Image 1 (cartoon, rainbow, N blue to C red):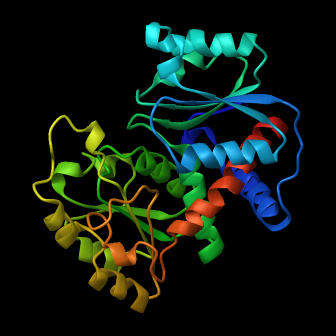
Image 2 (cartoon, one colour; image 1 turned 45 degrees about the vertical axis):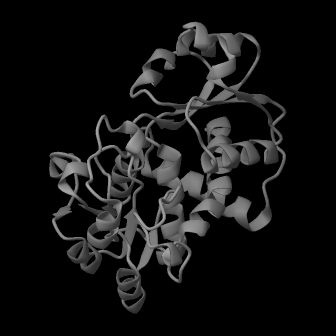
Length: 296
């Protein structure tokens, strides 16, 4: 396996191998194993994903080079394919790519260079799905029949699309909730087990709730009328967070969080929040992915 472009690229066995590597790295540290060079090509803003990939690669002994479209020939019209071919000719072994366009990776599928999808448009974000599943495996031990509900913007969320594929592969149940304007149409046909009209019903059903950021940058027009009302009807209020704690349930968010929109500000890192644990595990899981691509 040379590229990780979709959560669907992996088998359950491959996922388990990545998890085992991540677990070992977390417990014993990440050793310097590879004398190579990779490019971090982020064509959209990023904090957590870019820095965790950079740290993971460097811990593995890999030298990293940051690529920005603003200062590159892509600004002059060069295609992603020609850019990656150029990087390959220069001797780079791998590229981590984030792009605002869905399906752009089809241009580079045949190029003999390692590639990890760090998010493509509204399509997929496979390493975030791996991080979320790894974190929940730490908490629950087994993901089979675990009830995971995504709350919020499933219509534009690449995190949700990758998470749905991965959690279903690992035997979990997946539900969604949120305003109709931000819901993925025909979700049940894609494998969603429950489509809730009420966030409170969804929280009653789930073992863990993953709140999603409203993807304003992908909307041609505003799809919610009021951010204050959004928190009241669809967000994690203090009352809902207390309910989750009382029932022994957990909540997550891939970040960045719009405070007092998706989650009430005091609850972002409250008890039973796994958000910082997701961030912590990002380095180990992404190091596990890179190591797996070299070894598989």
